[in-house]
Length: 513
Ligand code: ATP
Ligand code: MG
Image (cartoon, rainbow, N blue to C red; front, side):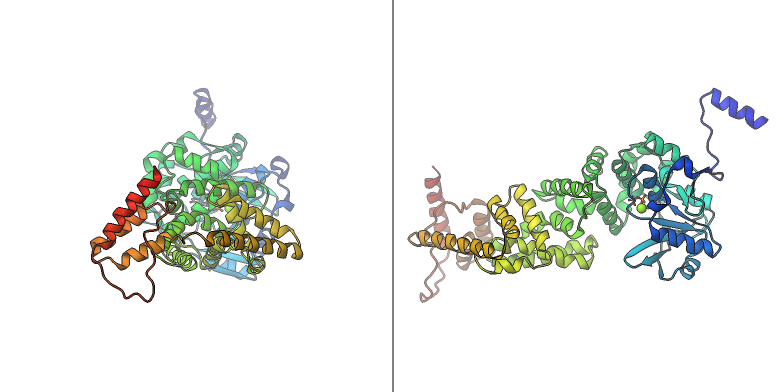
């Protein structure tokens, strides 16, 4: 009676009754409409095995949320009251993983179902670092506690495959209907426990076209700095999820509004720091969103190849200017970028080789006049290399004629391919013939090498580098630097390059006018 009066007064004053976090709402099959056949067979089997052994087991999290919205879930997670060891005993193939958060990977061929134990709400036993971030979280509890530990109300829905009921502790169903992402508990504290939740809020809202609840959004501006304390490997995972959620462009726009687009996700920063990086990143995101929209797969190696390309290309050019050969310069630039960034960003080894192949193909695809072009079609990553060249051409970095040639080359039969190669060889020969009469124009790298031979001090070396890299215009005829005849004895002529540089500059100025 007394409770009813309190509820009545609350309603009268417009206060909402707080849900009892221990008493869930049970939503029947007819109310929620999830078809059991939409749930992955592997997730159903995992639950069945656990339930047959006398444990509780539910499909939980993003999968239930997505099924309610008619979206195909990316992955299925199962939660149970069995401990990791007990889960392992109930499944045919399973391994226990994780330290901060121990859980079980149940394996069905290539399909993996992540199976965790209800986490306790009690803060005893949960280890935090000085900033309040949870670093060890292996205290098991009850289902209502597990629900309160999840991030957003729409992610705390449990589906029981045997009864086909959805169990809702935090009005998640209502938030799904209202299309809103709302943090469970006090957002300020929840972000401190795990700052990655800020990025998750943005990503999940963008992916589903939901709004972020005001109270959930408000602390982000003040707490963004906490992301600096998150291990890079975790940020890398989050960046990958963001890029492949199907709404990467929208995510990026929201991150920009919240000033989380730079200096937060190292994977994106690598691209954004380079002069053409933003162009590449935006184009890669647009293309990835389109592919996901069409139900196509996105290859992580292609994404890495795109994001790291501006940096690799800069190093490639620097090496060329130092006089290295094209292939060697590309191999070395790729090796150096992948070693440094690969370790930092925790790029898995299996992707590294593919990325290198995609980059090397950018050179190999330029050579179309020999039968080697036929062999390129059989390289496993040929299609990715071709797609990448197409992307570069759409951004204006590669001649469209080259990409069109390869498009046609893939479509036509063997005979026509040989004819295309022959025509290309003929074209090259004619071009060589017409150049035969002209004096050979030394390349920038040759000029630099030549001048370097005559430098007598580090200062001169630096001056030469400066001159060739920044002042020298390759398109201007530069007959001044002729390669030394091999039989002529080497003679060190101090400062002779200075004179040449002066004359070169005058020659350039003259021809620019
Ligand atoms: P996606 O569609 O990207 O898979 P998701 O919500 O399923 O989205 P997962 O990373 O698969 O995301 O996580 C599964 C579930 O685990 C979430 O729905 C949520 O309930 C819980 N969860 C994940 N990350 C956190 C976190 N940082 N804090 C609290 N709960 C989390
Ligand atoms: Mg998920």
